[in-house]
Length: 283
Image 1 (cartoon, rainbow, N blue to C red):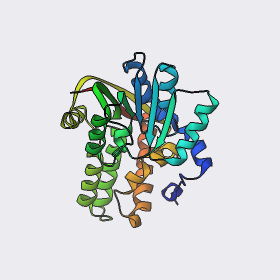
Image 2 (cartoon, rainbow, N blue to C red; image 1 turned 90 degrees about the vertical axis):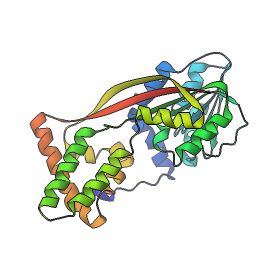
Image 3 (cartoon, rainbow, N blue to C red; image 1 turned 90 degrees about the horizontal axis):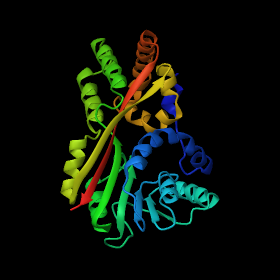
């Protein structure tokens, strides 16, 4: 039995929230790009959209110092409590964290000099609504900064996934074209810099700076990949949705075996993570 298919996590459990900090390597890769490039000046009022358990909001408050004020908004109430615990423990005074919806923010018009979101765009239910709110609460000339993974994300994995679906389809074990269409749809939701620029323009922001780079996530094999806690929390549900519940055991057993075979041939399973930093100015 592929036990990871039955993985479940209770995000309201305080112990889960506490352990969530162990997943920070993923957000840290993108957050480092952000921290290296955001504009800094005294007296800024900053908003972190989707701060999770406190990154990068707490780090921003610490790096910007007492002359600046950092706010955060995130719908995850249990994570807010954890972030506030850390902020208290570290003596961060210039930080205020709120639980709320970024598509309907409880802030005044033209309040912020800088708005950031580290990987948040991947989780916005309604990106145009969120960016519209960003424009409302941004001062004239304010900067909006997003980081995200891009089209081509984990392409090595998806190549094997597609080959597995073809293999099972040709064996008559599942409707090949239907599942391939679902996989293509799943892959296509990844962002592109050009798509983000268009989304920004529609919301009244002009892109002024972009930076792209690649990272790699290395695993011994597919078995290690599927049992990694961050993969289970961040990606497994989306992968499972490509096939019907009754097909998952067979499909993922075959996929895991194919990934393991590929890793054996190459010495490891190495996945490409294309990353982008996009900075825009309120027009």
